[in-house]
Image (cartoon, rainbow, N blue to C red; front, side, top):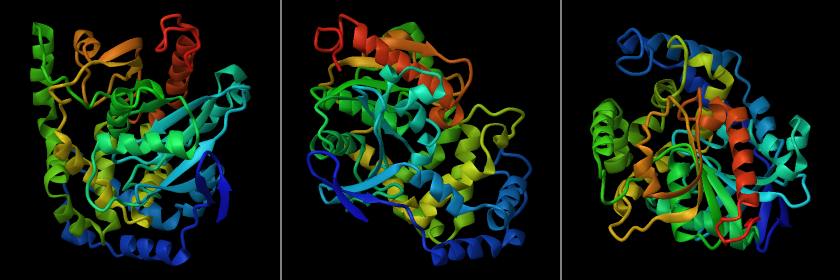
Length: 402
């Protein structure tokens, strides 16, 4: 490890290096999985497809190369720091322009920093991909507390608390006075709280998912119809969410010693929540991408603590903003992908939550936007940045608010 001052406080430069013994232990458990004890069910209707899980498990132990994926992560500068007693891991890629905009990008569950490996360089160095240096970002991509290479809190915490930690990372640890934030899934919920609680420093947010709700609920016919449909559509997706929000520890006992079990739990979500073709998960993702994301949960033993965020949100008050909620008044960009599993409400509902500067309806893509459609998301973020720089009605009342 190399100790270095990367902002206003000490952070430690780090490299990801998983011991061979850890990898061998995982591969041994995958090879020894008792397939004959699992009743075969065709397709994905009842959960993860038996044949596909067996197929990817075989690839896992014969062709998958973790060390190659490790190199892709270590291609970027990795750091750790301590915030409120929790080790926080993050990637930091400084932009190549004269004045790059600080951008905090946040993953969710069951994702990880793997979601951003294809967008970090494009955001930080647009000129390498036919773009303009003036559109560059300083990209900060953390592992959320309890996820991946970050440490775990002593007890479950929710997105509002995590937003406080992320704001401290950007301001006190890295020394940014102003920044913008982007996220989907839990990353979007954290962005909401950053824009609401920390607007002095988080000057704008860009989200591709709506996880929070207005405390007054739907107000007109179209909004009420959306809520009714949303509740109906989510019935078949509530199982995992309810378990992780109420009894995450019980689930973790069964998962801690079963890499195949963890893979099944995660793969089913990537299949259900993505814009796949012909029911084929590999029409969007390669086996290597899927397994790298799964491996991060396994090598760090964070399947348990990563699920705590659901419990933490329930303790913070659940999906609804508090009754005292007032509009998030920082400029907001919304990227609406067609296969997002949390269906977006009518714009009238969104206008009561956000100060919308940009609303883009995408033609393709699902829940894991940065991983599914990296170029589309990058393009939308660049467009949003330009609107912030040149809009005379920006957050501080002047053009170039960032």
